[in-house]
Image 1 (cartoon, rainbow, N blue to C red):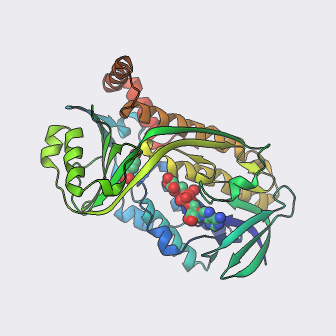
Image 2: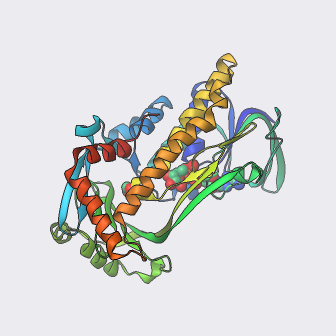
Image 3: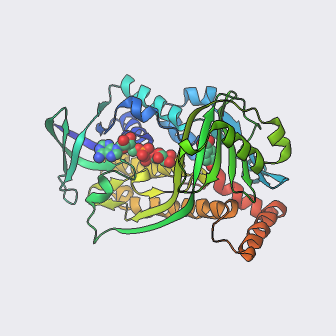
Length: 389
Ligand code: APR
Ligand code: PHB
C-alpha cells in the first residue's frame, strides 16, 4: 500500500492533521493503537485558543463547537479569600472557547468517517523505517496480519508514549524535562459549574481549579501528592477539600454530586528537539508535554499541526520545501513559549513541598503583582488566549 502521509496516532493531533490534508486532497492513512471508543473516553482539558478554533473551521469540523461551545472572555484567579479577574477581551480582543477535547476528537472522527478517511485501529508493533531517506515506510500489525505502507512522509502524532520520538536516534535528539512534585486529582460531576468562568485558586492548602464542560457538567481539580491514588479520595472528601481551597462565597454556592470520573494526573514539562528527522515529523504530545495549568496541551499540538499542514500543503501544491524545512524551528519557537507560560502559571499557583517562607512571600508578591498591574494582566491574557502562530 502507498499513501502520501502516514499519521501515527489517532488522537487530536493526528486526526486534525489528517482532516486538514484531506480537505486539500492529500492522502493519508492514520494508524491508532487503541479503539475509537478508548480514544473518545479519555477525559482531557477543554479550553481552545483562537488558533485551534481557526484550524477546526479550516478542517470543516467547527459546526458543533460553534453551537455547543461556550465563549469565555476572562478567568478568575483567587488566593485565599481574594479574587480578581483577567479580562481576555479587554487585553487582547480575543476570548477562549470552552469545548471538551473529547468533543473535538469526536467531531474529527465523524468528519474522518464521512470523508472515507483511512484509519486502522488496534494496530501493534508499529515501526518506522528509512525515515531519514526519501522513501520511508511503516510496518505494523493488525489482527496478527503484517502490513506495510510506503509513503512520502510520516507524522508522529502518537503522544508521549508513542514510537515516533524513539525513532529519532539518541545522538540526534535532545530532551528537556521537569517533573513537578505534585499531581492533579480531577473529578467530573453532572452538576452546574460553581461559576460561569473558570476559577484558578491558590491557597495555603494547595491549588484548585473550577472548570466545566457545559451548564450541567463540571470539572474540578485539586493539587495532590504524587503518592496519592484516586481511590484514596471519597467524593465527600474531595468536595470538602475543594471548598477549603476556594473563596468562601464559591464554597457556599458549590453544588456537589457524585463523581462520574475521578483520576490523578502527574504534572510534567517536556520538550524534545528537533521535531523533525528526515521525513519524520513529530506533532503534539509526541514532542512536548506541558503541565495542564495553562490548558496548553491541545493548543500547542494545534500550532504544530498548523505549521506541518502548511508545509505539506506547499510541498504537494508547488513543490516548495521551505515549510517542511522550517517546521521544527517554527514549531519549537512557539512550543517553548507555551512551556514557559505553563511553567510560570504552575509555579505561581501551586504549593511546593520544599517551599521556604521567603518562596511563599515571593509567590504571594507575584500574585499581587498580577492582580494590580495592567501589563502583567495583559501578558497573562495574551498567553492564555494563545500567542499568534
Ligand atoms: N501506534 C499507534 N498509535 C499510537 C501509538 C503507536 N505506537 N502510541 C500511541 N498511539 C496513539 C494513542 O493511543 C493516542 O490515541 O496516539 C494517540 C496520541 O494522542 P494524544 O496522546 O492525545 O496526543 P495528541 O494527539 O498529540 O494530543 C495532545 O492530548 O494528551 C493530551 O494534553 C494533551 O491535550 C493534549 C492532546
Ligand atoms: C479542564 O477543564 O479540564 C481544564 C481547564 C483549564 C485548565 C486545565 C484543565 O487549565
